[in-house]
Length: 137
Image 1 (tube, rainbow, N blue to C red):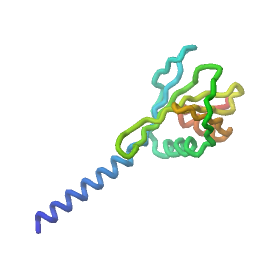
Image 2 (image 1 turned 120 degrees about the vertical axis):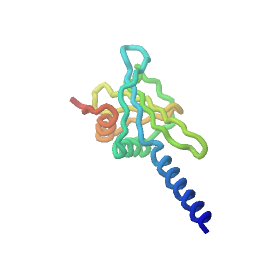
Image 3 (image 1 turned 90 degrees about the horizontal axis):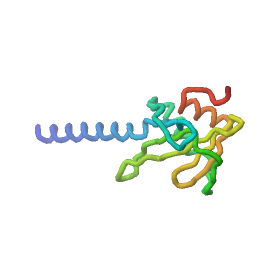
Image 4 (image 1 turned 90 degrees about the vertical axis):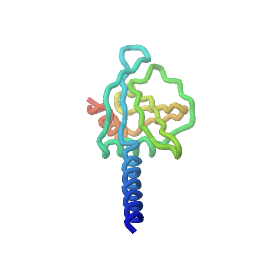
């Protein structure tokens, strides 16, 4: 009887721990900023607050993505990544981000050539999460 209780206790602890680990996956955004005029990025910020990560993830996932290859006139201003778990392995979803010339919107391209121009509100919210600053000054 004691062996059964011990077995189920260990099983419960393992299930709780694995659930907590899965919950932690995707709870961080790594942000890099372009330096100078070249296509070189340096680490800029990590976003670890769960609510901010969830909000940013929601903005990106719910955007009206287009499957078109867009040629941008200049290098991206920022690059950011969300880790996510895909059934059997961990992967990174990478995004290149541009601030439009008027400074009111963000444009994003994925590594699989999906493109979106975010609304002004989503742009402002995402930019503040990623940089800690307001988009429009």
